[in-house]
Image (tube, rainbow, N blue to C red; front, side, top):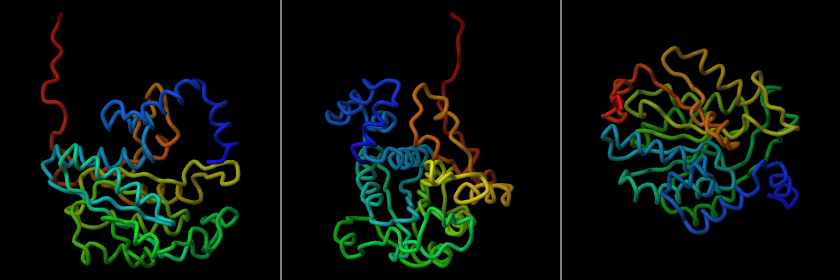
Length: 275
C-alpha cells in the first residue's frame, strides 16, 4: 500500500482512532484470534476468517481435518498467509488443515473475450517465481497447470480432506468458471457449507466490476446453473456496526442436499425465560 493509499484510507475513515486501536490490538495480540480477525488486526483477515470458520464448522460436525484451496497463487503471498493462519487455528481448534494452491505459474493467460476484462488485465500479469516460493512454503502444495484440467483431476490425484474454505483470485471470468466446477464433485469432498473469498468483485474506478462480466458474472451463472448449490453473501457480516471492505467479498457455498447440511451445529440451550 502506497503512502497516498494509506493517507486516503485514513482521511476516508469515519473513525481514525479505530485504525490506531486496530494497530495496537495487532501489535499486542489482544483478544482471541477470532476477535483479531474480525477487527482486521491480522494479515489478510479475509483468509483468516474463511479458515477459522471452516475449522469451527468442521469441529462442530466432528471432522478431524479439512482442506483449504487457493485459486490463483501469483507471487505466493496469499498461500504463505494461509499457512500462518492455519498454524494458529490448528493450535486453537485442534483441526488438521491441508492447503493447496492452483496456478499455471506463468501468470495470466490471454483474455478470451470482453468478459475477462481485457481493459483491466493483460497476459503475463502475476507470473510466479516458482523456486523462490517453493523454498518459502512449509506445508502448502501448489497444483500447477490449467485450472480446467487440474480441477477435474484434483481429488483423484491428491485425495485431500473435505474442503472447508476456498479463495478465488483468478481475475478472469473464464478461469473462475472453470475453478467453480470444483464444487461439482462428490459431496464427500466438502463440508456442507464452504467459506469462500472472491478477490475481484468490488475493485476500483478502473476495473468497474459488474454483474455481466468478470468474477461476478461467473458467480451469477454458477447460482443459476445449480439448484442445490448456491454462493450467497454472508449477510451477518454486512449487518455489523463496522463493515470492513473484505466483508463484501465473502460468499458461502451452501450445498443444500449435502447429507450433513441439516446437522445441528448451533447453541444447544436457546431458551428465553421470562424475567
